[in-house]
Image 1 (cartoon, helix red, strand yellow):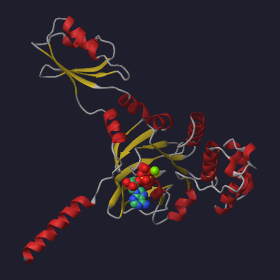
Image 2 (image 1 turned 180 degrees about the horizontal axis):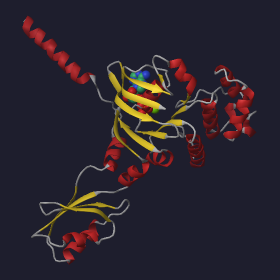
Image 3 (image 1 turned 90 degrees about the vertical axis):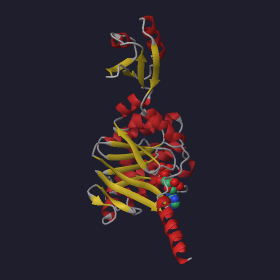
Image 4 (image 1 turned 90 degrees about the horizontal axis):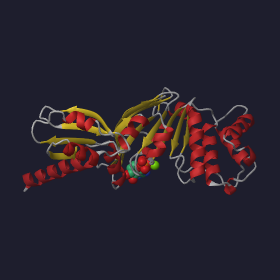
Length: 330
Ligand SMILES: Nc1ncnc2c1ncn2[C@@H]1O[C@H](COP(=O)(O)OP(=O)(O)O)[C@@H](O)[C@H]1O
Ligand SMILES: [Mg+2]
């Protein structure tokens, strides 16, 4: 269980995350989707008890990340962006070492169990230095799981993997999601859609959208909203437009306009225009309206990763009050 309310973190004057509120339940894989610099790692570090927030609260597995950080760390498995692996240790020795650090009972049995579960049995005696990136990610996952945590926090777990390894790691995570609460960050839209039960889109430190992947997908893969206007009274126009394949959710507006959404992946606009004209109407206007999530996401991923500058207004106020002071003095 993860519960976050109003979480904000400033690095000096730079605000990395602002007023994040969300929760995640057991058996849920919550995706944290956003471009580089959006604030994913910052949030995850706070949730693992490694760094306090500037304001706001977070509970993980029922404990407060600031006041009860030891309890939190006992119940959270964390796979950081770069897992600190010891290259001159074997896989088995490294995991045994991590298990001992975590004071895991029957450490050797637990390590064997993890090697089996993560498909690492035949690598047990390999040196970490000699492992492929995909195998290292598995070892990273294994160390996050070594103390049987309730909650898993995985920071871009598939970064740097080849396509086959990505599929393997994703399947592994889906499997783990059945009996854990997982927060997974990624900057890849399709990954969030494939792996997660629910996705939050974060940009510049703020959550800008949150939905199930199905609904996000509907809106993200090209469903658009179109507004149509014809001359005259437009009687019967709705049935003409509705009969075009790819048109969904048609509404007639009071001012005589017609609005519709397109079926994801289809673009019926040219066909709609032809149908309207062939039916004898004068087509005056056909235009997109509203901002789709696809547009939001494109904007997200195109943006330079400059986070919001919280200090901007304050600095402005400060400098203005400075000036006032100067004025008063002069
Ligand atoms: N230790 C730090 N000191 C100062 N600024 C930081 C630090 N870590 C991250 N930032 C800034 O905070 C913002 C969010 O970063 P981060 O949480 O790493 O984003 P993400 O993981 O989504 O790429 C970025 O603008 C980044 O430059
Ligand atoms: Mg990051």
